[in-house]
Image 1: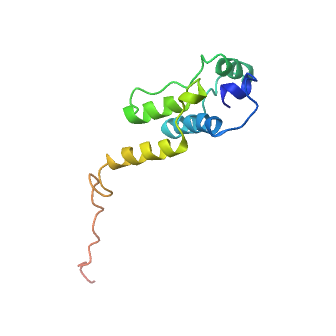
Image 2: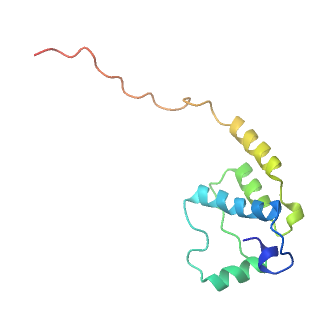
Image 3: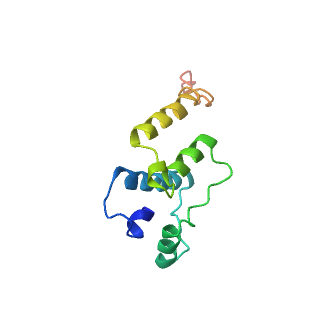
Length: 117
């Protein structure tokens, strides 16, 4: 949940609140883990409200993914991107990937010329 909802500075659910949550989902997709799994709920809420708690980003994380993810969970809602910006950034990241099927091993071919017994 976004810091502004937890600390009471805003009671409005907005796109920026959803963007914060999307940034956390990006981290979950990256790591396959639940953020803050080892912490008690009170510590999680306190850390988010004080803007001192964000999930650790693995060093192996793509730089563009890291930048987008960290922008999404910015403490300041006005610094978070819109979903239109997020979609554009993701399209740019996708365009940098090799075409589907490239850099992948070909599956083994079936041997159709088997000897008949």
